[in-house]
Image 1 (tube, rainbow, N blue to C red):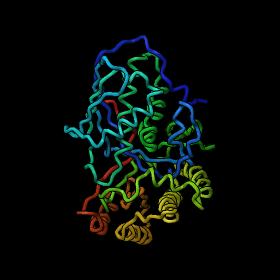
Image 2 (spheres, rainbow, N blue to C red; image 1 turned 30 degrees about the horizontal axis):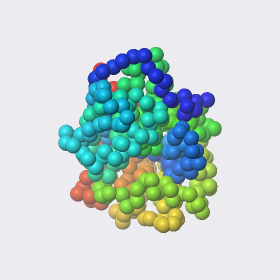
Image 3 (cartoon, rainbow, N blue to C red; image 1 turned 180 degrees about the vertical axis):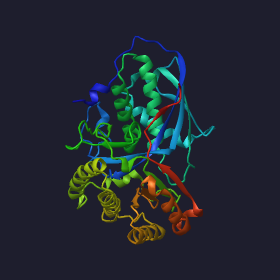
Length: 372
């Protein structure tokens, strides 16, 4: 069984003075929600005890909503501290730098070679910034893939499995859900007895054959509110400590993940709808019953949900919704009903979106190496 100590890089005999890599990594949408972290009681240097999920989660990897990051590096004299410049869509972005600095500090014990280089990080999103789509998952995953490309060059004997495991492990330390944006169309993060190889330390690709019903599954993202989050993910996760329903929620997530595993194998769309919608509403119920409490849905979120329920009941079209920790609605449906669902969205749901904005996406495969 892999432990965090297995990811600590030893000294390398390979010398690399400069170079660059480029990767894209997608956003993802959780079907079984990650909400709540285990309290950090580990005082050792193995700081991966941060960002450990209180319950397992499962997500669809998206295809079009992604971050593209180029990492250029050059050896430097001073090897005491981190050194990097950050460009977002071609312009310096100073307000993003503290998060990158914190990330580098967290992963330093696993990647000690980072202080040997000055980095230029040039990043951009394929979706509009502040569009309401979480970019921390795709951004941290893309940066981690580039860092692992450097590590692979320093340690050429590295296996492909280790490369992706450590990339997911590092991404997790930047943003928990980022570990699900590395590899695979369906990714599980967190120990669960029904998923072979599942781990709290990194995301794993769904190990079984996925039913044809879920091939090219569609996700149309309705942008109800493109503003900043009312409550940050970090604050939200912390509210699960001492939450009156936390233990029941964590057990529910384990049960739903086991059920969803079977559904993805047998293609039962009705059961898929039931689990996914229940998970979305449970996530928001946890926030509404915490102290302090938050309502992150907007009136238009509820209008959309009710419209989807009405449409599904009247037409028997297997369309459902899920939510992130905000007001936006992800409309999920099989590829073979795309025309019907998109007509419904354009006729009845677009009016509830901010400025009529929505994004059409579908299930993807994970990070892509653009260096080759």
